[in-house]
Amino acid sequence: MSMYFTKEHEWVKIDGNQATVGISAHAAHELGDITFVELPQVGKTVKQFDTLAGIESVKAASDIYAPVSGKVVAVNNKLEDAPELVNESAEEDGWICRLEVANAGDVSALMDAAAYAEYLKGLE
Amino acid sequence: MEDLKATPLREHHEGLKALMAPFGGWLMPIQYAGILAEHKWCREKAALFDICHMGEFLFQGDIVADGLDSVFTFSVQTIPVGRSRYGFLLNERGGVIDDLIVFRLAEDQVMIVVNAATIDNDFAVIRSRLKEGANLTDISERTGKLDLQGPLAREVLVEHFGPEIGTIPFFKFIKTSILGVEALVSRTGYTGELGYEIFIPAHKVVELWEHLLKDPRVAPAGLGARDLLRLEVGYSLYGSDLDENTTPLAAGLASFVNLDKEFVGKKALLEEQQRGAERVKVAFKVNSRRSPRHHYEIWQEDAAVGTVTSGAFSPMLGCGIGLGFVKPGASALGTKISIRHERVEMEAEVVELPFFTGGSLRA
Image 1 (spheres, rainbow over the protein chains, first blue to last red):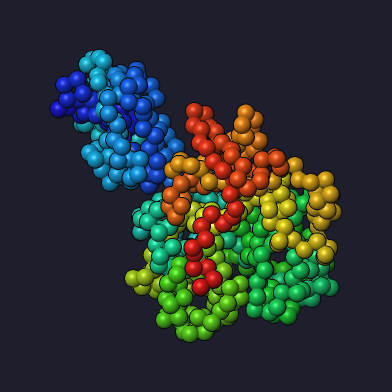
Image 2: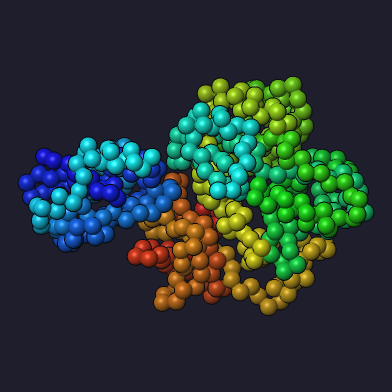
């Protein structure tokens, strides 16, 4: 399984044609306490970098963009009552949704973990 | 970037890894452990806030003869010594130049506590309304202020500084010795909890901060938690919910305005009372965890009827809450409204204040 990141701080884990999506631990930390996650509709299709979901914290409201094109096949319903899971475990239990990948080549426009770590250094 | 002022505690905040940000011209701690954790600590224990940025003026003289009694929307002369009163400094149009608290220190002495961003203008306006030569001094620089707020605040202060603090009723204050200097301890605050505002010479602030933080019942809280705490009990924030174009009547704060006395802005308020306000304040609850935010639009059916001035997710209610101004037709309790911003839309209902009623304020 490979993990990739976007410049907007989403992560995606690719396992066959399934992609699990969330926001990075860095993004969760920057947002502060997360109070609401707007989950996408199961069945919705998105193009890469389209608005996929929304997230609100005590500080700000932000959009979450699709790291790859695809169809939403599952959402993390736990976040409805416990959005703080994103703060506690942004890159594991705080996943937001799963996509059926439409185009495996989309990942070429993303960063791997090492490139993302470099990218974060540049933002400091 | 403008030059930001800092309180004597700046290095202490940075040492606690606080997130610092500009507020009213000051570099202030927004959060330490996290806004929700600090909010919870204040509702359950005792939270310590650095409020040294706020301004204090000292007036010495004859309150009536020097003109101080007609400066604010309330009478200063009728405040008993040892008590304080909340109200407004208005412009000629009835708009709020600042909201403030006046402490009656003695028959001929009062302290006026004002917001940080408005210190210089407030001082100039108040001075201009007093008799020439009246004795008004800006003591903000030499005055430190720490707030200890929460259900355990009284037992903490009594244990550390003596039983007299435990006898102070709501909106009264005493002068007492703290760490070897004279301090003013007032039973007031901005959180809806039992709490105290401690005014102490600025050079003793660091010592008092360190002393109180050694107590395991006390934790520091930043301006982020303070904003959430005040919104849950419906207190207005100057600059968001109140400004020079908003009158206290429109803002639902008529109980802090005494129309039986003279003050600048009274004529405009009487006219507004006659013709009715063009917009009125509402409090509303959202039917989800979504947060309304400053400047979001308020809609009723298919018409935009107003604007949100404050909003947040309320941990105590488990939903979004907010304050805003709407056309009078949309202000009745129970009115269904929606809050809109770009692609976000949330359903809400006009409710009574305060949102949260379970606080220890009058305990």
